[in-house]
Amino acid sequence: MEYVYSALLLNAAGKPIDEKGLSNVLTAAGIPPDAARVKALLASLEGVNIADVLAKAETFSTPASAPAPTDKKEGKGEKKEEEKKEEKGVSEEEAAEGLSALFG
Image (cartoon, rainbow, N blue to C red; front, side, top):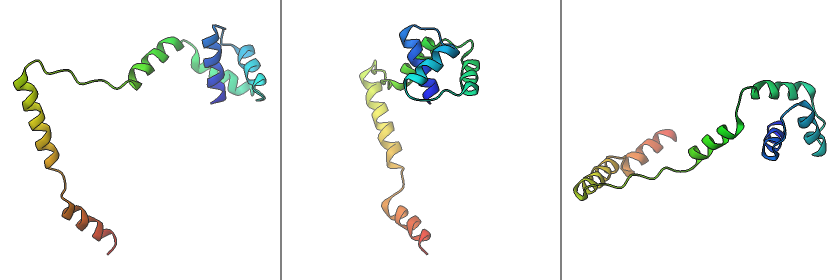
């Protein structure tokens, strides 16, 4: 992970992500750089726009809010359907029977 973090740090600083830069960041952090891992990371980042990837990741981590109902009747109907779906769950007795099967 340190190698990825160093690439992200270089990107945030506006510096080029290359062997020298990655090695310098790792060395500054007290991690002896492994040339093979540095080259592997650079190969995997080739052609990747880190800013775009981070922007997409932010949209995935933000919970999407449900759209507001446009019609009051529509909104009430949706709530009733959701309540009915929740009621179809397993009762406590059924759950207890399933647990007792585990313990003989």
